[in-house]
Length: 249
Image 1 (cartoon, rainbow, N blue to C red):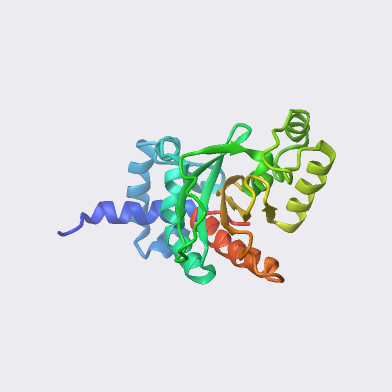
Image 2: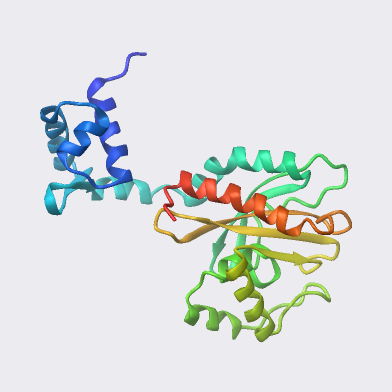
């Protein structure tokens, strides 16, 4: 089916502006169109609220596009972007890999791809768990503002296994470590015999909007001495996912 030229050109302009606010001349060079054509298209997009004019004659994404974007479920967006990365990690690590988002003081699991082993951990997709007991929760907490973190630490935390960490000061140190390392491990804390590692996923604004985790039976995961290597694999994939979500950090 033939495309509509004006739509193609307008979309190219919106993509260019989303990467960096620009003026007519710069946009003309980037999308390889005459300045008169770019000016005409920008005028139409501005009237529709799709772009807006700012200082120095530059254009940025306008309120109409932002309103449309805000209506998209972030979890759906993350899952779509991350799918191939999850599959690749499962092939590399042989264990289940999944995604989660934060909802209040809980972590909600939104996707999981199982590994090839006969013995599998359960699929937590659709369920929510307290932040202190899962590695994804520790990752989210490591990016919270101090006042919000203090409020969290002042709460009562449930004990799931003998290894569940509930002491506020120990939790604080653990969260700080996750902030420094960029990832967090948990072992036998949500359930005995379950180990997991998680890393953050960032939005275009630099906020943590999700976490990617890998988990497996503690007797085989992680292989001793491979903790940093495994965390590094996840970190690199999370970086690529964040970049696809327009994170520039």
